[in-house]
Amino acid sequence: MRTATVPMSTAPALSPMLQRLAAERATGALMRDHGTLYLADGQVVHAESPATPGIDILLTASGALHRDGWWDAVAQAGAGQRVGRYLVDSGRIPGGALELCHLGALYDAAFFALAPTRSPARFRYGVSHWIGPVHPVPVDAVQRETLRRQELLDRIWPDAVTDSAPLARAPHPLDAPVPPRQRRVLDLVDGVRTATDIAQHLGRSAFHILVDLRRLTAAGLVEAVRQAPDGSATAPGRITLPEVTADPDVALLRRLRDALEAL
Image 1 (cartoon, one colour):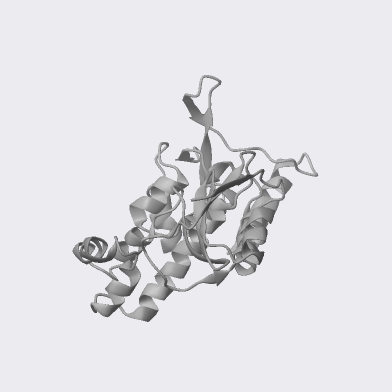
Image 2: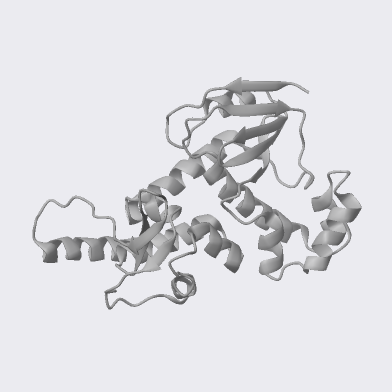
């Protein structure tokens, strides 16, 4: 089995190596710091990242599939790399529902896997994922969606610290209405959990959790827990972004405006 190593590009959320693999119609696993993309004939057929729930959690948490049904499929068809096909053929889940959930998991994990990194990416030729064929996605589509998602997050709140740090509620929260979906996220903010922890707990897309958390941050309801020099957590603190005016009331109104526009 061949292994290729190429340094990663510094361009945000873009991978020249992935584009080259698509051009050569490669099959295998592209391994990066924050996740792995699986390719077949140059298209992305699956993606995984420790930052986001896997397709098993998304399927079972949503109620689309009973957890026993998932593990039965893995036991029966995992070795043959046809878990997806087995789930549909055995009647455990409709093909359309599996495809929809699989695409969500693929784009979600790819967003994190394609995050900028200084470490080299590695590609292992010939590697396949045990989920098997579900719905291949062109590399260009994956990269476009990754960029679109990053641009959306930056429009909501331009500091990414809440994406990975432990989160706490603001000590003096603004009196802002919180939609039900964001309320479920806010209820899990406890000074210890990260966005990934919350996504795993709720069984939801990690990217959608990032969207909710950035909106809550923009609304003054959530803050990142600061890290002391020794790596221990200190009191939570809001990251201060530069403002074009020293007037705190004007700065507050700008943040509120941005939060409302992002809803």
